[in-house]
Image (cartoon, rainbow, N blue to C red; front, side, top):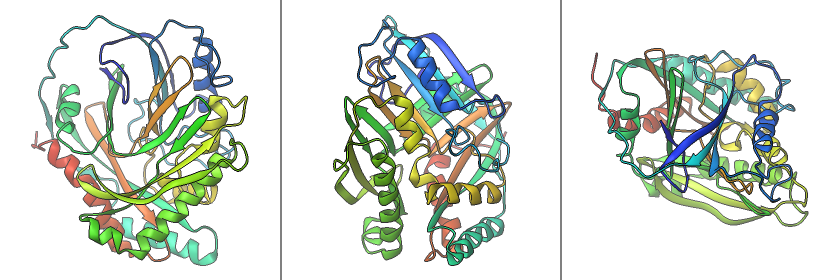
Length: 373
């Protein structure tokens, strides 16, 4: 199963693969970039001449695949699906066009959450207390659920295709595992010297609620400022701009607020430089990013697995188009996993944060046509 988001062709064949799991050692972002460079991709620096006949590469970075400057934080809880890698690169070639076999059927048993609504609300309150102390401004608290799974994992992607507004939908599989994204959010786009991020922050069932929400707008602007600062670490001074701010758009069965932040990269910038500056995305961490992650590692009951990371396409010339792995499922060892959450600010109502996470999960669970095993 190889249907990467934003790939130019659906007919792809694997050429080479690298996988990394928490505990393997090293900087996973640097190792992923080095693997691409060894296979002739123009990523050190970006924009050079490629030395490969490959069509491109699929890049997956999970929430635990932290670059070196964040890896010194106390560790997060272990992943609930350790068979799934926390980072992977798959180099691919174009394959002859052929009708792929249709996905089979799957069945999903009853879902079990890794914390109760009361425990989720208590975590949101802990964030509010940290904000009151001046430790941080915002943190994105993420919960997890899982269910028994049987059948063809490819059926998950087929069912998720019914969810509207998922431009970064895609799937990747390995030995005994698969990841299925229905993501509405762009994490990072690089084309030549131009870099762009489109953070999503703010969720509602209808556009009017988002447009009128001072809490959501404040939360959103905090993350836009964080993304501006992240891109500024690798940008030509004075080139970071925000051409669009707080667009309210339908995405993945709900309404979201989205902005666009753009910059021109400094000459000689590598793929590692850009990812180390921007990953993980601000919309799934918080502000300041390091302080938010440190607190989230204490609060979240299980690791984030492949979620809250990045998944997408890298061209041989070093252009990048990665989605953020929200609304993303993992299947392994007879279970299916999903993570959802939301940003907590001083103005948050903990009970409302629990309801927001449930609202994000609802269209995805409906799409899977949940049936007890």
